[in-house]
Image 1 (cartoon, rainbow, N blue to C red):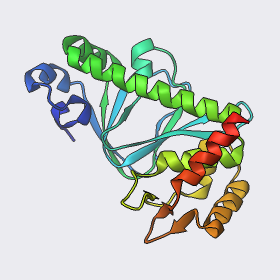
Image 2: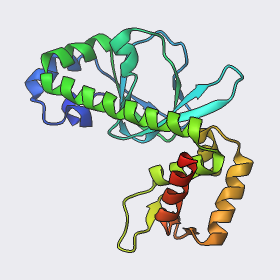
Image 3: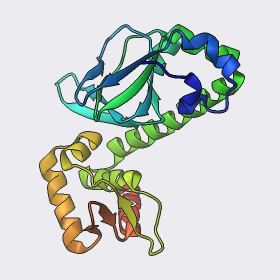
Length: 227
């Protein structure tokens, strides 16, 4: 299965003549749900561009507990750190849904960045965004309890405010997934969600979870962080 690099979101707008020399090295693959794409400590340096479906990025603690770092959907990519520094993989990546992925060797990825300054700028923007998000999550882990980490995660996953100020998470998040994203167990997450539903802060509606009053969660987080 083949494709064009210019069809990948990261390469949009770049003249095909600049991308064509690297296309022969790209491998296009399809991954079924659950398929392991990368494993921790893998020594490969390929970069993976998700063109359809989504994957989940997970790290494990020395004690064996898992923490979800990210879910990369169509238009996103992963694996660039190994291409840049040559170090072993620091996380495990598996297909969350059926995916189509372009696998580009690290050397080809770095060559196209060198050839096209605009792509280097895009790469710096992506890395900066990821560092900012990682810093925010680290701050939450060190300053917030489970309840308020959950509030922050719900707000992070929600869409923009609607006309009434509410924000929607669609599809609704799985409680076990929420727990793994914030370093908690499912049981306390289930209790907190139930309490928010009873209080009317959250509501279930047509296959979505609606945050009816986001300000309640925002104010609670601010108060916790200041205490």
